[in-house]
View (cartoon, rainbow, N blue to C red):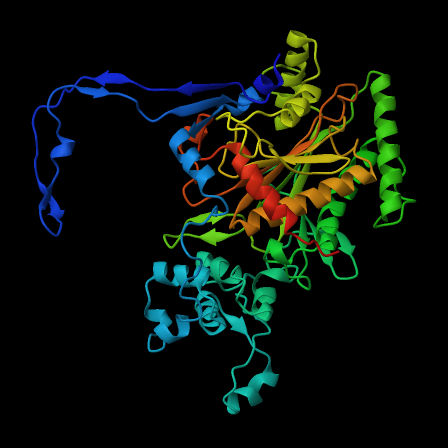
Length: 536
């Protein structure tokens, strides 16, 4: 099998066809006027049947993971993209073109008289602290301590010290969407952010069950007991005294803390389920302790599997919804909070199958689809899928066969991981980070592999942000713990949301529409990565 076929077998649609005209009549109307003529809509009402000759050429690329569907690249758009280097951005409009003019424009307007959709738009987009504080006071009721009486008498604006609560101990929030929108605006003063959403307890009673403290970082681990994910999930969340609303502010130490809590939680929970002693382990673990625990857990897992038993926990999930925004209509566009946080959960080996008395059903994880595909691939070709896939990435040939342009999909790699643009992108700007070794999940990832993954994630997020991505979905694809003997490489998918790709009928069917060649986007990512300096 050709490596280039494995990375995504491709075809080229060159449409030419006839369309029968079944219209009853015409409706010729004036559309407008130019400087020398009246414009009519005759083109919309052609006479007779229509011959479409030389329609838009479109590449169709089958995804190397067939359950992801197929990607369609519009050739004319991709050719144009290739000819205009260093102009790519996820946002086509100037960002906050009228920055700092908000107060001037709204000087004589009482914000309380504005319609809700205007208030929401201001809450999301304004850069004025003064306006944002006023909107915050419209959205909820703040509490002030008695010591601020002197400030008021002097004509000074006092700072709130908390929120007001009702008799049922609920914060008095008049407009939840407006409250969330303004609290997540990076330009709102930090003391307002802390009071409204960041101090533990401000967003509810979810218990804090872990903590990471570094020289210049602080991360809490929250437990969501009653979660949309069965068996609950956890969130490693930048703390109230380490405000990180932008990935540009995220340091390597922050990323290490966010991911350390994830590794520690998974290892600890599995250790407990295996009956391993965890009471004598210091809490929280240090880096060496974390690696010793990983090895102990992996050995314990292999021991029970060799006896024909299965662990209680069979796999895990990890994801990151970066970026937050509200539409002025009130629809939340992404994430639950701008303060950077990751989410993760453990998935049991089996649950009750309600259709079979005494039967066991394996819960769904996306990594199992990859596992099944790799097994089928080996059965059909007698080759290892990931070994072949990595070779195909390295040996890539451009779709348009233009060898004078960038031919590589890779934009970063080290000894452990590879960052590349998939040939069959599912979103404009999709990139992957994959282990170069036979490491299928975080139980199999040693401290060097974990460090490479953590750094790679941060590097990619900063690079995408530098290209204008403001909302990015990231998730891990990993194998089940008990598939120990089977080869699978853990990888991470990064899916930026662009202005014109919110998801629609096409994406729901696995039909992904892209306007550039993947090699050209890889060139943009390589340039972006090379400009990034990650602070420790």
